[in-house]
Length: 225
Image 1 (spheres, rainbow, N blue to C red):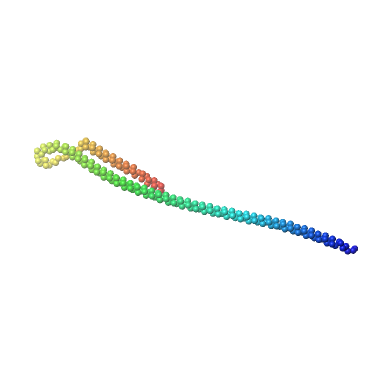
Image 2: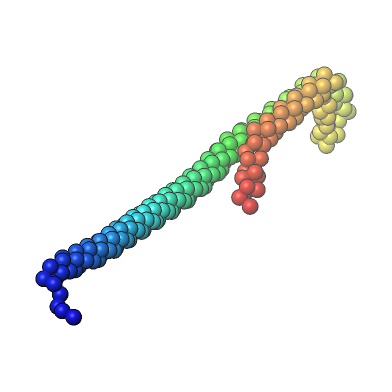
């Protein structure tokens, strides 16, 4: 066999070059496709990472906001509870102070009223004593007046006895009996009744005046217990 003709070698070399070029282009295209797929995968991975970071940041932000809202709510609730507690303490202190002041005022008013009523009762008693003395003096005056009216007849009898003997007259002293008349007794009874009615009216007025203070003191004592 003879060697290749001179025209075959260049043609074969051209074919080989074309095949190498095609093979290189195919591998290059395959590499480019793989590279594009890797780039797309990396891009998708980057997007996923960015999305996860955004979601994590959003979650952390929401958590911080929720924690801050909860903290502020707890703080407001604590402040409101403290304010209400302080308000209740102040109201209780004011109520106790007002109650003590009212009790003190009631005691003072009751004491003043009792002093006034005692003074009025003393004056009424003094007036009663004065009226009793006046009645006694009037009774004595009436009895004396009745006795003076009865003396002329008794004096005549004593004169006859004096004529019978001076010794007998000296041993007997005239006994005067004071008997008030019906008009005098009626006047005395009327004055006594008027005095009794005035005393009863004063006692009733005193009881009516002091009754509200006694009831207030009793109610206060029940409220305290």
